[in-house]
Length: 232
Image (cartoon, rainbow, N blue to C red):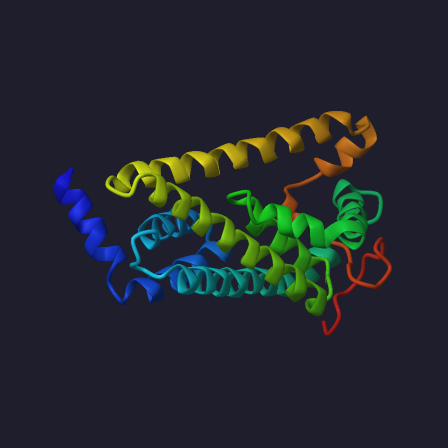
């Protein structure tokens, strides 16, 4: 255990850690198997002792998350046209397109911010927002809010654990991760409760396909329109 903690200490206090943190946060935006949240929390724990510094941790984690979300959005935007053209009126996919467009047009920004706290969900939402043609300017605004709030949340969770367990960073990391898992569980419970309250028709449309396959249009264009994407 002492050897493991020594390796963690060396890695987190290295000047290269900032660059690695940025890269991991960015990759996690479109490849959600990278533990970016755990890394931010761990950085927050060690920031309580002064190295790394808290402000750069928050800034670089937020910048990386913002970049990764835009990569995912652009991938969805590129693939969206093909999926839209393949949807025939009257099919489940066509119904899903209209549902996705209406949902994103009405509350896409809120969904994006909340999804940043759901591992895997953030990528599905950003892909979908690109596919349905949600306005890039609006997407960037909400992505910035989501990225900054997420970075602050993770770093401060770790920082609180680091202050509480100054002489035992491992316990600080455990407390930070435990709190993060608790928040994620609470979000999932709320989502489950909302799904249960939906009517059978809405539930059928919502389940017409995986979130990442839904198409429509967003921003200020008519939400239910299904047709070629702009520029295609």
